[in-house]
Structures are given as C-alpha cells and as structure tokens.
Image (tube, rainbow, N blue to C red):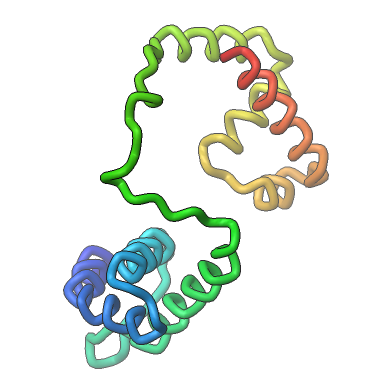
Length: 161
C-alpha cells in the first residue's frame, strides 16, 4: 500500500479518532486539536517508512490509540500553562502592525552573509529542519557547540528585527 493510500485510509477514520479522544474526557474542540496533532506527528513518519497497516489493509488502531493517548496526557500535563481564549472575544486591533516582510527578509539575509561561514551554515542546516541531535551525530560536532551556535545566531537575528 502506498504512503498516499495509507494517509487517506487514516483520514477516512477521522470521526473514529475524534470519538477515541472524546472517550478520554475531552470536549469536541480539544479532541479535534489532538487528532490534528496526531496527523502532524504521524504523516511525516509514514512518509519516512513507518508501517501502520495490519495484514488485512486496515489501520493499526492500537498504535493510533497510543499516540492519541500520549498527546492527551501531554496536553493535561501542560494544561496548567495553557490559557484558553474564545476567538469571538479576541481583540484584533492589537494585531494591526505594518511589517514589511520583504525588508525583514533582506535584513536577515544580509546579516547572515556577514556572519562567519560556520555560524551561518550551522544556523541554515538546523533552521531547515535537521535536529541538533541528528546533526551532532552525523557531523561529530558536540551537541552543545551546535546548540550554542544556533542560539547565538538566532538571538542576533531576533535583535535585528
């Protein structure tokens, strides 16, 4: 079964995944958020080769259940730090800011070109999605060296903008 077919089969069971999360005690909105997080986590793994199909071309419900349960538990653990807002009550006037994204992008590119090549390359590789741990393993450069370099460049670029 192709990756696309597996993802479509997973999506066809969307209401089932919502009901599973509802059984944990969540309301429909939070259940929908958790299921969306599950898609965000599982789809890249499927594309990387994870097999979640049983022999009879059906989704491995236990695996999905465990992912949903873990996401729910993580949400509950972090729940003390989460503030829920009603979107109808939001004040959008604070969001009105004129940002020239092209100008900001040009500033960042200019500043990156001025940096030492090592700092720039480490920032670009990590910023493109490579984890610091994987980068460290592949390059034999210590994790904290890469982390500190990335953080230093990121902080410098934040101050620029």
